[in-house]
Length: 394
Image 1 (spheres, helix red, strand yellow):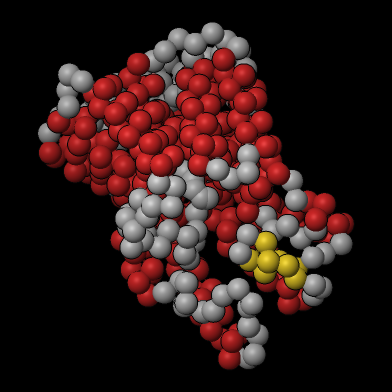
Image 2 (cartoon, rainbow, N blue to C red; image 1 turned 180 degrees about the horizontal axis):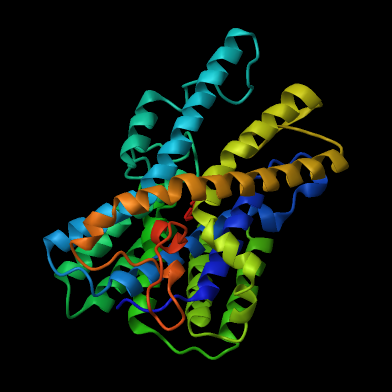
């Protein structure tokens, strides 16, 4: 089912990544406490749906035996792990810095070195199992990596379904999506919630890739408008997550069908954002942490607990400058990670890919469906989230 690149989906992925970054920016001033950004985590389901759609579209006809499944999963690991490992090591250094600071009498009111980010959590991150099951520690170290952990094992489930379910694949995808959605709705505090959120979005996207519905042109913009409304008015309930998944499905299907609004998402800036979206998603938390510590220790001022983090309160102009620096720093780091970390493993994995079908990276397809050079920037193969985070994020 390898098909041509859909440029509009790259643009959508870039927008989703930026909104996740804005979601994680500290609320340094009460004037910056926008509800639509506080609900930016709802972009992680967009990553999941995008990932399921593109992975199914690319690999749905390429897994025929156990060897193909192993090669597919290995490519997913090669795609995800280098950036994850670099950022994990960076956050390990953060814990060392916290430990040193504590020895100097500089103590955070909300955390301690190696307490939440424990050796157990470190091992789980190394194995990318921090989001799997009740014993996981999904929001430790580089918190957005929770969604990468969930996606890695969702990929394996997808590959197994493609291999073993031939005649009723759409039904299998639908059952997995609906079952996971019910778990999110009925057991939102379950330790399996991160995996369920990923399953719900990913397998909805995979089902849409198989069915390829032709939607009327107004559907995509209407779904995007609905998603914005959910972000504006949601108060964090589980139903908002599922509504975001559904609206993301309509958005992805509409843009894939080349709805007129898709032209907006093909703009050069959005295409670049899409190319670095995985590195942006995975790297921004470090930039935000550094700037928040600078604001706490250098700029001073009263501190409030916001979303579990001690957040200094700054004058609005200073806070706006901080947000600008955080966004610029995150984009700069994303560009470096994309160039020097994401791209390098691709060439080393080429011999593995050559043993079967060519490595397909839909972020660098031509519009006629012919493959040009591979790249490491396609969020569809990283999966958000997000998620995330928070994502994929996603």
